[in-house]
Image (cartoon, rainbow, N blue to C red):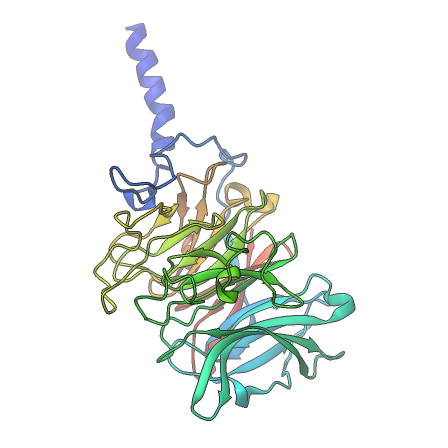
Length: 403
């Protein structure tokens, strides 16, 4: 009888814990006998906030009247700066309400399909240098275009920007499909660029191509970061590479432990969240032609491939911009990766173990199918700014706060 009582008590304790175990789609992608560096299903240490509750979320509209808003940063003044993909526009939203269009050479932005004015980042020294960075399609001359990363200076008052220099040019583009293009300034001061493969099958594994990669460069000069894995290459593009073998990088984030993470669109299956390892091959190789029936991470390729830390399975949900969220008010979500989702119109919170495995995924009802397609999540003032991918002026910037 005593054994029965003890067993019952243990089961009562275990049931709620088992409810947190992720579905198989959250497992590390690995094939038997592959050379993936990720060990199979390691036991993850309990996160510090594991016993805390997932908070209810309060959602309000911070900015409205936007067209395909793509990215946002908060300036030291509290104002928000936002990119709108198509038609290309740079918008400044004041803390007390109201917004203005920033003077910007939008006639130079090439827009087509998934490409236009996209990634945005602010310099850590903005208070003194007023530098911002964009990634966009660019018209080089009539009939010729590429995707590039530019540095700009925002005028006092925010009325216009002036081009300082082009940091990275020649990111490939064809029809505008798979244009990337997310930016992140790391705590070490490097500028990381997530790119798309331009729907060209040979780009992801071709180290001379900037497509289907993450790049790491000096944010002032555009030169390859000194500790890049291929820094000794004779090819200038190869020296800029941090990782390769990607399909279409839509999100970049840095965890509190310094690790870098990317969010990637899958084909008909397997959107991915990847932990980036310098020099890593992430296994996308849709050749010959552009064969999307191949695995997102093909472990049959030569060398070593890195498996995703989370994948959507089949079908995809269309993951996009992401950020790690921090703060006690986030409760059990403190330290989670917040991922905006386009097709499934929700915000996912992924809580990874200390070693970056075994995600536990939450999708709060407050941001599940109520606001349309979600493009980007950015942490601001202890809350989250979430951009909705609406057109015709229906796009919004939502402010999400834990209650």
